[in-house]
Length: 276
Image (cartoon, rainbow, N blue to C red):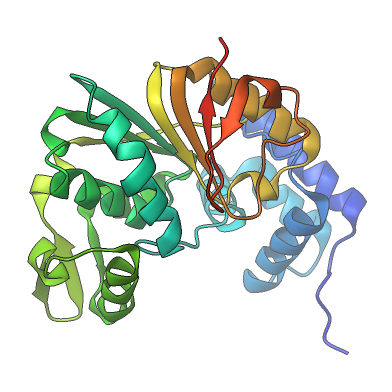
């Protein structure tokens, strides 16, 4: 039987408390099964021989802690992921945002930026990008650097183009990037309206007021207490009649802020704030 756990849940908890106390990164309320699996994977990947050795490295090597944070945060994404979600944004949200003179959007947990560029493409096609500012944030500085560069594997473009067409895109998708050997660099026309910045959803506060907040497939890694805390952060950061977009397995239903929001009439996880 393949071994998947090398250190116990109690040892993982000790490690996460060390990271919180020494460096301020709070993973203590992440979903236990997920965080245990990722910490154990890192233990194996970096070939530690004992928990004591692993813990000593985390407590005494700041550079290794950067790697620890990067490795245990999940960074799986793609352009126009869940195409019908983007169709709903295009048809039900963008027409409302178009009425604003200036649009502020927060894309929280943006990872390497593929979905942020997807949103920028939609705004450009709707002739709204010039009056929009997208604040794309993540806890992981390494993935933010990748997002800033806007360079993605060329091999992924075929799938991204299919997603774009399925979303309802009608343009030539290749017009948005320049191919160079094995990579595609997306146009700076798209990125000039995007501000990439580090932000920790667990410990940092609201930094602006937005008309749209997108945070997809991030809450699923947190326990209910932390989910509720972050949803309150989004509520505090959203204008009345603003929109909150979550991932397909995430919901506002049965949360303490659900009474303030109305879900749009489609199968996507998009809510509109109706009460201050």
